[in-house]
Image 1: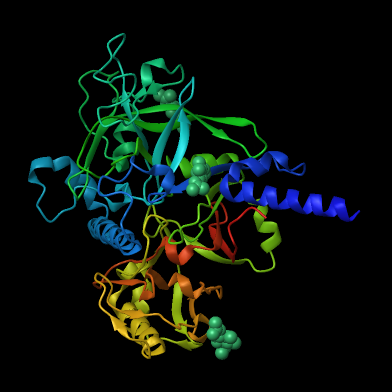
Image 2: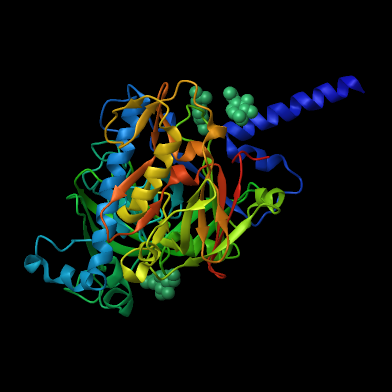
Length: 485
Ligand SMILES: *[C@@H]1O[C@H](CO)[C@@H](O)[C@H](O)[C@H]1NC(C)=O
Ligand SMILES: *[C@@H]1O[C@H](CO)[C@@H](O)[C@H](O)[C@H]1NC(C)=O
Ligand SMILES: *[C@@H]1O[C@H](CO)[C@@H](O)[C@H](O)[C@H]1NC(C)=O
């Protein structure tokens, strides 16, 4: 008896370690597995799995501080583009079409399509299916891959389906399910205007072209098509999503997509992959992000369907309304305020109101939490008071850092986001007083000039399960270790 217990305990430990390192494996072993759930692994930009493919600079980073700095720089660029998008509003479409008249101030594209998310996902495209590594972007609607079409037997300047910089190329001629969207179609002329379709249409059957230009100078040029995306289900089977809108990107400019074969659109929009995939699985998707500042090698999961892990958390799960049309294609939420140590901070209500230039989005593509100044200042003041006994450090780009020798987390007053419908999100302290170097911690907020959208980034979201219900228009969240127990 004892012996059997020891064995099964060891087996459990074995399973748990498989679970931690290869999230996909455990699923096959569970008899009660729900077959109607699809799971993709989210790979962080700084993951050892992506060594040499994603980062152009020195790799691995010499220090954690360098990694964190890089994240902050990306956040700032991403936010700048997001805000430009929002300010220009509907105007961006006509701006786009005027081309040469576009003033320097008007954004060339939306932050919505910036494609600079922090996580990568592997998906399979076409029939037969070919695997590609895409940037998972909660701020994008369009999914696109580096692609060649109409080459026949020519190799289209690719060597065995790779570009010179080792990125993979989708050879669309070889896919039996690849079908271009004609430029004369209503879909091209009206629906895809949101996704920067071009008016150019030399013949009725010419594929509907797009030209995304990004604020940082990056661009993706190609044309729209429908194709099949194949995904793995948690029961080990595969499922094909037919007629997914895919951009066949023939050329890119700039550095925005370094290391990736394209972008997976996880934003909310009629043509986004998230919407299409969620539609097959009860209109729900969820993710759980582990602490990526820790050196652990645990995979993050993006799940379409009802998250099995959720059941054990149901007691703690809270729900709040998603404002799906407030700052499209982002997932916006309605915040009432922030309290620290049980005291509600004095923050003007406009800060949380998307119709008045504020508002808040949940963005897995940003790392830190970016707060509009009228919210940032009181939050920083309150937190600084609680750590003022520690020696202050100067670690740019952070405003406030300190020497954390002897730091006791449980003595820090807790920060809580309060939603207008009563839900409360209480992140762990390490999500806002973050480790940036040995013995050094910083307050993990970035200030953005008012008026602007505030962003709850992925570090703040870590160690929580987030489940988006696109039909009910809610997001549920609960604390979780994000391992598959
Ligand atoms: C592409 O797929 C959509 C459904 O997602 C469908 O409405 C449309 O007719 C398809 N177009 C072509 C050209 O296959
Ligand atoms: C990290 O995980 C990947 C698979 O998820 C594995 O291939 C790799 O060997 C792991 N690295 C370490 C250091 O455990
Ligand atoms: C942190 O403070 C709490 C409350 O005073 C105390 O119970 C705990 O032992 C302290 N932890 C450490 C590591 O000092």
